[in-house]
Image (cartoon, rainbow, N blue to C red; front, side, top):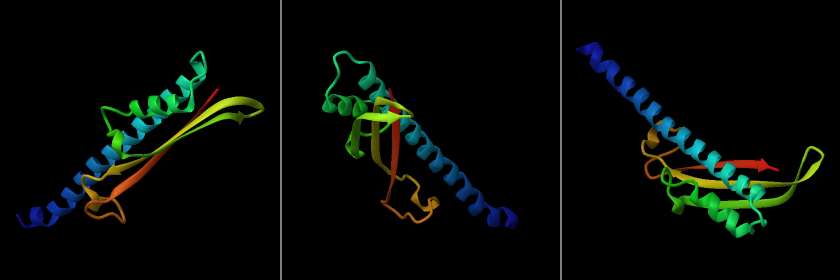
Length: 123
């Protein structure tokens, strides 16, 4: 019983850290997918969409996993040069992820958020 009582807090900390970093990883994958959806929409749509339309598609691609209200920025850059070829689109998104178990993320405390960002360039 004594050994279990001594080890239990450490095991709980490791378990909570695994859960929190799983949420962070899932949110990051969702953001990467949203930028890919926005860049694909920008490159394949005919006629060419406006910047506002690309931003709307990118914002809507994060739901239902994440909340659209926590997006801090969506940036669209057209005519980006990739290698020697111009005409690519770059879509970047920034998101404030509320931490469910903040004490396992270094430097974070209760009520803190973690800023995640993702960028996709597609031609």
